[in-house]
Every structure is written in structure tokens, then in C-alpha cells.
Image 1 (cartoon, rainbow, N blue to C red):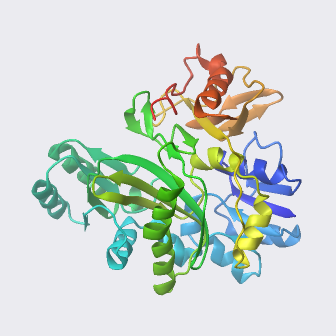
Image 2 (image 1 turned 120 degrees about the horizontal axis):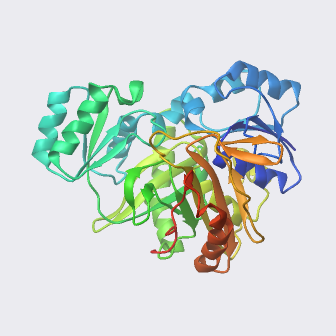
Length: 412
């Protein structure tokens, strides 16, 4: 089959690798210099009309949308209006990620367990709520903020400053015009993605990602510094519980609300003393979870998408292995960082790389983004996979230009 993947990060490269591994032809728009398996297309992910026209001209069988921003802006609607087959939620359904306030209202209305919250556009009202609730407490920008619009405040003052930075200082622009202030939940987190078509839900393997920049879960939040799958302790029974109590009700609720969901529904979940609860919903493949889940999928992704959208059970099959991925980031990320720094030779047998923020000159790769690449490996257990990843990243140990966490999948 002929696929067009929209996006340029590690998640999109993982999708490219999965499809190319089953001998499909893959185009990537705009892609990145590390996507050697795909034909690069010089069209930005924001140019919906040109992307849809390219899909028509190249006889693309399916377009898969990677990032959240195009989904929230209505790229799927444009493709469907032009009769192009596209996998992802339309604009009305992508709001489950595009507005945290909408998602919280949906969950409260339909009895899906989540943290108590308040939503505010007024600084004083938000501050009053925070003082009533106390700390720790979580402050979130309502809209899309590239995974960085979440502040876990340890003190009331820190929470108040977070509100002010969003509502008054416009730190996250339009995404922070409204804030959601949530109860802080304690427990172990995991992510569960599912292929969804209306009220049909087909879960993948659970994964756990690490958002903090540094070892020991220290430092600022990032878009994700590594992940692993499956998750010890998250049994098949717990996955089915998550589907029955959260993913299936969410899919049913979206149908009931007149916003039927098609694509990948991602649930960020936490196991608390009061049971499993939703931290967030995303409307697409997670990054970096995709990079550790897809390598474990036995099925041809093209067949899965074809079956799911036709209302058929894709009969997902998984390797009896474990997968670990660790992100290499530019020094300074998620703050300011330098671009153009040369990557030393990297890689080894038993590992693979998905590229994100890179540029290439001949055989030389250079850092071009905050998250540069992910080293991944599969093994009989997490320890074996983790050791292979660490070996692949050893060339960066002496570098002042890049860094990575060395404890991903170590303390489960």
C-alpha cells in the first residue's frame, strides 16, 4: 500500500519504520533527515490543502496524521472533504485533546473517573480555588502546549505563579487563555493507546513514559525522555479494567455527543488508592510511547488500520518481548539549546534509532531540535532491552552537547 505520514518527529519515524518493515511505500511530510525509509515531501504539516492534493496526485491509500496540532486544526476534515482516506479524528473529536476543559466535562458527565478540577479564565478566581484546595495541586493550560503546559505545584504560591504565567503573561499563548486546576493524584502512571472506530475499541500494550528531564524524575517536565512496554504490574486484567471503565465509555460518550472518534485514543492513567483515574486524553499516537509499543506489534499496521476502519476486529498480536526507548536530548532542553552540534557515531547491533530533531550533511548527523533521537531495543525482559539501549548511547557519555536519562525502565 501507499502511505503518507504527516509529521516530523520520532513518533512519525516509528510509524514509517513499521510500515516500511511490511514492504509498504511510505511518504513523509515534512519528515526529517533521519527518515531514510520514506520519500520526503517538502510540505509543512500546516498546509492541509497541499497535503491533500499531494495524496490525490500520488494515489496515497491512507494518510496517517502524527501530531496533535494539525488534528485540532481540522486536517482530517480537509482530507475527507476531498475524498482522501485519512486515519485520525476530525476536528470535532480531536477536541478531547485540544481542550482539557472539554475532556474534564466529558468525563464528569459520563462517569469516567478523573481528578476533581476547576476551570478558570480569571486569575483571582483561580487563586481563590487554589487556596481553598491547598497544595500540591496541578495547573494545566487548557489547549495544546507541546506537552509542556502542565505544572505540578508543590506550594500554593507556585500554583498561583503558574496561573499568572498562563493567564497574564501568556506563556503558552492561545493554549493558556483558560487554565484547568486539578487535584493532585498519587500513584503509578501508565499510558494505554487504542485503535478506535466509533464505539469499537482495540487496546494496545500498556507503556510507561518518563516526563521529567533528569534521572530520578528530577527537573522540569518535557515532552518525554523515554518509555518502556509492557509495564510490570499492569496485567491483562488491569488493561481490560481500563478499557471497560475508561476507554470504552469515552468512545461511547464521543458518539453520544455527536463527535464519533476515529484513530488512536490515548489515555494517560494513574492507579490511585481510590482506583484507576484519567490524567489526560490524547487524540493520536503518544510520543515517546509509540516508539516502544509499535516494535512489539506483530501485525501489519496497514492491515490493522484497514480492518479497524471497516468495523472489523484487527486481532492484534504482540511479541513476547519487552521494549525500552531512551531519548537523546540537546543540552538545555526543555529550555534554550543550541542547534547544529554534531552527533558522534552511534548505534550498535541489537538496537534501533528513531530520529526527531536532526539534520544531515552527508554521513554526519547534527542536532536540530530539543529531542534529537530515541535509541530503542527489544529483549526477553526489560533489563536486557535496557542494556542494549545503554550500549547504543555510550558514545554520548562524554558529550557536553547532548544528554539522556540513564534510569529509564530501571526502577519500575
